[in-house]
Structures are given as structure tokens and as C-alpha cells.
Image (cartoon, rainbow, N blue to C red):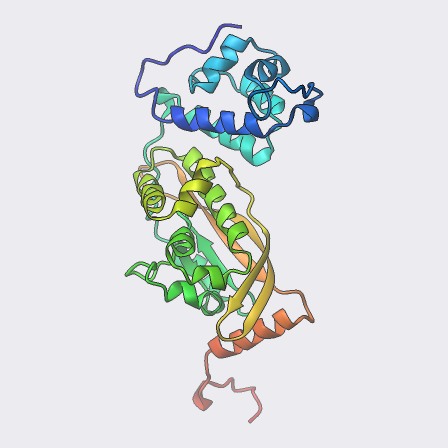
Length: 316
């Protein structure tokens, strides 16, 4: 197989460092015994050697070396799938590698995806209707762009933080890494911070030409050594769900499960793309103290009805 060729159209180096660092980091994490390779004492690098990955992927060492240097433009998806299999990439890592490859093809570069798409009123109605479950819509920069009353009560420390914009838009990475209070609010701060960085890294792979996202990463890298270290690990995460534990200042510790659902919204004409947001919904296990604490928060946020607002069929 011929080595991947240099692409001389556009800017072939735009995301080359991301490709290089990602592949090197995945190779370093793959223990030789996982793929049946010997683990002799003469190994000078962690994980697999380049020639070992090349052999597992069925390509030459020269070819894989050039690929690991970021020369990914023009590489077929089948070959990338073989490399992903050789490196034992999970589903999110594989998708990230393919996104990086697509972004390295200047002829197919998309226009910048707008991040300021107005959330339709119907989406706000939907989250408002969930009165017993905190729910919010999250953008690609991990801003909360729509939320219900229970979400705002649950995340009141973040909404009240100086890291929230003048428009009242709370941002998870800014709160986690720039507000010291976040370490008390999030029970598993480090796990949450790593997951947040991994989600942001995946978004950067999907849209590496997003200037606002690059500025956000630059700001956090400058101001937070923790963010800088986690960003350098090149971990990625797309499917974001699990357990969240918070130390709420009013009701105490709350443990919830949460699930993220894709919420594609059409962009204004003439752009044909769709801006992908996430709808996040939290729930507490029935019959637990956490459910009781969520119910207490919900009771504080429930609208109060005046006597004249009661239904005609409601008993007095």
C-alpha cells in the first residue's frame, strides 16, 4: 500500500497535531499483552511500537508512521477502520478518528457550524413540562442553552457563578475549572471534569474549525493547569450518560442517573447543516432520599396558583 499522500489543497496541517497526538496516546495506552505481543524488558516506550500497530492493521510501518505524523488526508475509511481495530479504539474514539480524517480533507471542509441557533419555543415548552425531572439542552461548547425550573434550582451554584455569562448562560467547563466552588458541589469532581473535557474533545474533532471552541479551549488551557493536563490526554467521549452526585447547598447530597439524547435543530437557510444539541434528563431512583430531595426542590420551584386561577372543577 502506498503511504498517504500530502494534500496540497487548502490547509493540510490544520488538525495534524490533533491526529498525531491522538494516535500516539492510544498506542501508548494499549498494553502488548492485550493483542498477544511479547512484553520483553527491552521495550523503551509504553504500549505498542509503531511497527506492531502497522502489522496489526495490515499496512507498512512507513505508511503507519506517516499516518501517525498527521498525514491523514485522502486515507480511505476502510483503512482507518483497520487502524481503529488495531488500536482497540472504542466506539467514541473510532468516531473521533473518522471526524479528524474528514476535517483533514480541505475540499470537503464544511462552512463553520453556527453555535448561536435560536432554540425553538417548542423545545423550551418540552423541558418546562418536565416538572419532576431536571432537564436542559446543552450546546457543543457545553453551554446550557435551555433549561427547566428544577434544573436551574439543582444547578443554582453554577447559574449563580461568576463563570456564567451576562446572558445567564451557564457553561460546564468554565464552572468546573474556573470556579473553586465546583469541587465542593460535584461529589466526583475529577471524574466529572475528565468526562467534560472528553466531550469537549469529541466536539473539537467534529468541528475543528470552530473558532469560538478553540478560544474556549485556549482560555481554559491558560487559566487551569487541570484542564491543560486533561486536554493533553486526548480522551474522547460522545455518548454521555451515567450517575451524577451533587452536594446541593440547600437540600444536601443528591444522586441521580442521567441520559443524553441527540437533539438536532435545523440551521437558518441557506446553510444545509443541522446544529446538534443534547437533551439531558436527570432522574432519582424512586423511594430514595435523593428522590425526596428532588421533590423538595421541585416544590420550591412550582408556580403558585391564586384562587382566581383554579380550575372550575377544582374543589374549594
